[in-house]
Length: 258
Image (tube, rainbow, N blue to C red; front, side, top):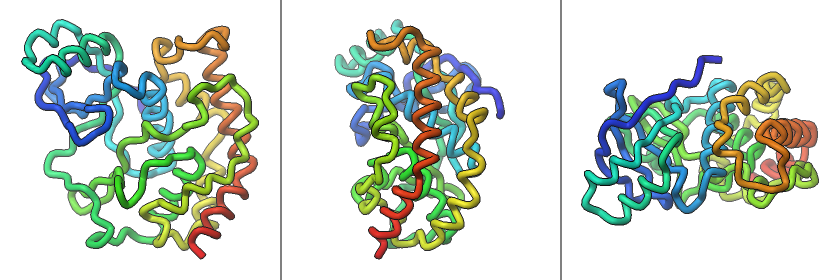
């Protein structure tokens, strides 16, 4: 896997107020622009864990996701913004945050105007069912069109099992009935093919490599865990258990299509 880069914010450009967590476009010390997801936003660090894990998993499966980077944020940047809400968010997010490469000129996916092919739609539905992503619906597609290609963004609402989680794998076999609301489900008529292609790629080694990228500071919020390494191992085991029981969520998606 390509190493995960770390950049430092040099300039706060503009807030993206349509996002529930109020992400922002920032400029970094590599002169690039990124969509910054704040650790201090309402969803907390768990949303960043989901962004990183599911985004990197999608990339490993060959799905189009903007580059993900770790973003070092200096709380002193709060002094340059006149908005008290943004000042508070920056100060609460000092340290490592998460960024996605900014895609200039991209537009929100419109299911009435765009028709991605069945193989891609099926792969995205499979991924989102596997990772319990509740937030790729007609109301909020979390898909962009850039240079006439589809790009997946915003995975912070995935892995919802990890909120208040004690490491149990009891929920790993969930059939995920919310897949019925997925914006690409009507086009996903190759789910069996997607499963045959993608499932063998999700190995213990891949999951361990992805979880190793999650900063310790995002995993230090629960008394139930001995240390960050224990949490990472629990994520790996949960996802492997979910993979082993995937017939449930595949059948659920097929039923929803029917």
